[in-house]
Image (tube, rainbow, N blue to C red):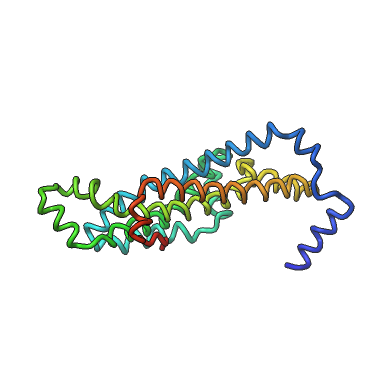
Amino acid sequence: MRQVVALVLAQFEGEPLVRWQWIADHLDEVWARGVQHVVLTVSSVAIGLVIAFPLAVLASRLRWTIAPITWVSGILYTIPSFAFIFLLLPVTGLSLTTVAIPLIAYSILILFRNTLAGLDAIEDDVKEAASGMGLSRRQLLWQVEVPLAVPVIIAGVRIATVSAIGLVTIAALIGRGGFGQFILEGLNEFFPTPLLLGVVLSVAFAVLADLILLGLQRLATPWAAKAGVRTVAV
């Protein structure tokens, strides 16, 4: 690894780390790739949540389904991103779908586990009291269980989002990588400016997204902070 790093740095020798004029000349490209990165990240995590949430609700009701759901989602999660993308190429081609499918697959396990953990953390006494007040199972889910599970669910969304932001950069290999395109361009041309730009923008996006989700979590559950509810993802 050290030899590889040394070789890369040697190729950059004599080149300034940042050419500000190059960045100024490519602001439109920065915006376009930023939009692509955001769209891929948000859509994949949103679709992953749409899939994972009903699976978690099902698992909380039928406990025997936990093992097969975890097994299938776990297998998808263990497929290397490079392999996943190239396996899809003959089917979906050089499209956003080729990138979105692995991102969705990777997010399902995280979101499923967190949603299930949030639902399981609700005490039986709370559910029994709500049922005693005449709430149906659907009302119990949406009016009691989901609101109480929101802190843990959003914690999972935060992890899935940050992971997706990092994985999107790999999609630059097929020209769909958002900020990853700058990283790939910098490596291919031995030009540090786009390389650093891609890295910095990806990290900044991950930090910003995490802070936004944390703020939304606190706005949605102001009672959680007062009660000291733990929101650690699993």
